Structures are given as C-alpha cells and as structure tokens.
Image (tube, rainbow, N blue to C red; front, side):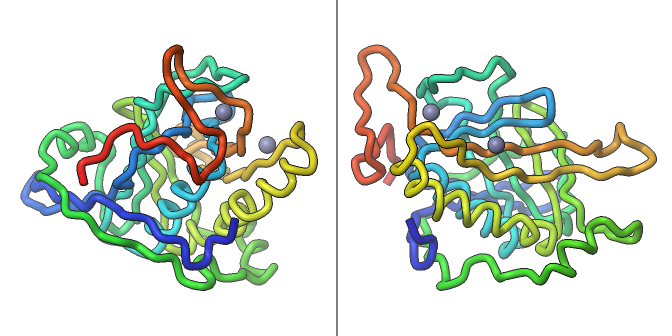
Amino acid sequence: MRLAGQERRMLVSTARWAGADHRVLRPARPIAHGLLSESRFGADLSVDPAASVDFAFAWWLAARSPHSIVHLPLRTSAIRCEQEPDGRRLDLVLLHHSLGFPASRWKGLRARLRPPAVHKVTLPSRPFRALRRAEHERRHYQEFRDHLRWEITADTLFVTGSRHAFELEGDEVRALVEDSPSRLAEDPGAHCCAEIGLGTRSPYPRRNPMALLHVECCTSHSAPTGGHLSPSPAGRPVLATSL
Ligand SMILES: [Zn+2]
Ligand SMILES: [Zn+2]
C-alpha cells in the first residue's frame, strides 16, 4: 500500500487550557485494529494494514504540524490479537516539542475539547523525505538533540520531538505501511515491524530513558465475541462516526 496520495479525514478540535488555545487532531474514523500497550522495553503497537496508514498519518502530521497535538485513541479498540499483550492499554499522542505542552495537562485538555470540525488530509507524493546516512549517524553524536522524548501518563503514551526527530523515523514508518502487506502475503508468519527509538542515553536516565516503540503489522486478529470483522483493509469496519 503506497502512502503517497492517501487521504484521511481528521477531526480537528480546539480547547483552551491554562490561557492558551490548543488544537487536537484525531482520525474521523475510529481505528478498528490498533492495540497499544506498555511493554518491558517501552510500548508495543499492533496494527493491521489500514491502522498502519492511520499511524503513518499521525506520524506525518506530528512532523509537519507543529501547532497540533495528534491523538490516536486506541484504548477503546475491542479487537483481540492472537498474541494478546499483558501490559497496560494506552492511547497515543504525538506532538511537536515547540508546543511545550506538558503531558500532565492532557487529561484536562481532553475533557475541554470543543465539538470538532472535519478536515481532509492528503499525503504528498513523498510524505517522508529520504534522509542521508550522515543524518542518521548524527544521532550518535553527543551534541545531538533531536531525540524523541516519551512519557506515559493518563493511560497515554506521549511522544514529543522536533520535525527532524520524527523524520528520522519516517522511513521505518513508511516501510511498515508499504512493505509489510506484500511480505505477509508471501509469508503469513513473517514478522514485519517498525522499531522506533525513543529516549536518550542521557546521564539522567530517569528523565527520558532509552525505549522502543515497537510497531508490528498484525494479520491474526479477531473481533470480540458477537462482533463482525472483515479481514481486508477495504472492508474495514466502521465502528462509529460523528460525520
Ligand atoms: Zn492483531
Ligand atoms: Zn519487531
């Protein structure tokens, strides 16, 4: 599945909190198959091909929209994967570091969101620019500052970073979406994932320790008892919509 030109409708809500207006973006269509849970190494996200596109949109918006908080509500997904994670279920929030939005305010902000407007978002022909090897190598330098910061609070994984920090993982995200379906079609038992590095090797590891956001493309899932789920992305179920 090519990311170029993909379209998604996003709900755009605003809320005022602590004297500032904030804009929150969410997918208009709830993500049917997206399961995020805390893991020993950070967090595991299990997505089907359609949800991997939602994740890529969120990643792209976080890189490109420094004034928005991108929210993927995932805790409410009723889906069950073959390998059920034991960790705590989480939502995902991605945001640009220049917002300076403290994760501790998220719960309050979420409760204040005004009714949303719907915006259509179309990905460009190359959503994630190709990075040179030197740009990747720079992340091992001591003066490198574009780490993704992370924090778990209010049952939500917050990932914060600069545009460059999100772009550094862009190719992992692109490959997950574009390469996994064909690999899984050839070999249904293949392990297709994006390994997104979070945190830093800082001398203060408790502040932002190294962790992994492991995003796996999953094809072995089932709807809850009594539910109905079509296996193909095209037949992805619409659980609810406010449009
Ligand atoms: Zn699954
Ligand atoms: Zn993996």
